[in-house]
Image (cartoon, rainbow, N blue to C red):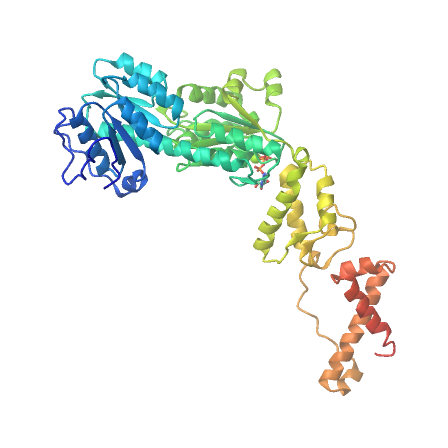
Length: 516
Ligand SMILES: Nc1ncnc2c1ncn2[C@@H]1O[C@H](COP(=O)(O)OP(=O)(O)OP(=O)(O)O)[C@@H](O)[C@H]1O
Ligand SMILES: [Mg+2]
């Protein structure tokens, strides 16, 4: 391994288990790293700063067996020089060093490179310093002598994971600047960017989030995005619609029940809080949560403990709650219908998802997004939305917000006959629905047998077919023109032909008036 650059000769790659001379970790064998751990931590660079050479060496070897890249420095000054020269993710920093103390180094690194995660190494008796270090921005501390090699590895791995998460968030934030999409959400308006920013900011914490907005604005997508950008993303995202569960079952659904807790409780059953342990619980339509369940939810949020219905025992769960509502929850509180304490608990961070009419600039993007989605699903080659149709889309009041827009586009994709969505394909477009279109009709029943006019039966096939087609075209065009009061453009539109093709057919037929 030549990853180890330092102010002293590089640490040789470990051939044997890293049991250096340091008395503090002597005799303790680390367990072999799993394949996953090796892959994950490879590329994470750790800087070990300690004035004691044997400890530096031992730590370096230990960390390298786990795939970390390691640098070492014997004092604060060389540590700062190394930091200035390249990327360091995690720093193990001794407190007691000659010249610059660990606390001084900590302060300087915080100012110059705030992204580096620092773990302080303090003497056993000096917990007060350790606490002070954490207050000043250290991520964690280890007391010397180390309790075990595992303790060291766990602390470094946790710091490395946090660093990775922060790097990822940074990257996302940069990308957000000119972003048209966030999670499953589409939209680049400034109001939506603000939503993305808030969601991204709150995601890595475990704080409760309250998502407010009219029906169909995308609250559930925001909740999912919060989960997907959190450390809980690998765990479950559990959705509960509080208004869809019968009142008498809400508590048992959320918190579980024990056998015999109520009539019909045949066995013990885990609640959704337990299902969502270490993950995210999305409480949709929170305003509809019955009062008794509100009390229990508050307790769960405050203590992290739940009590299944009929049980005397509490269980500890680690659940991040995201709640959503489309009603004015504050008004519910004022009307005495929702507990005020719970409201404030949930409302630590509120994300307001704006109605669609407040982000009209997103309409084309959303419309194209849904057009592609449904065209693909239905196997249709629709590639455009006409400028007139887009204008019409922008003008709608969209009471049902994005959901209504999505439905409108789905409808249009079904109806569109060319490669473009036209105004009349939209549910509110002029002429829409007043005339049944072909695609509106149920598929033709198995064709009724074609009755061959007697005179065609006397002709050769090619000639008979030609005349049958001409007869069909003539009758078809007459019907269409009759239906539209002679309006050629409208007749063409309803036929799914463009105007010039339609005219050509008219001309062909009127020019051959005498054909059968
Ligand atoms: N920004 C968006 N980009 C893409 N699709 C969206 C967006 N916002 C909403 N949708 C889609 O619109 C529909 C409604 O969204 P969602 O269910 O999240 O709304 P909601 O605010 O939870 O509504 P309700 O209050 O009625 O439950 C969903 O199909 C969702 O995928
Ligand atoms: Mg919803």
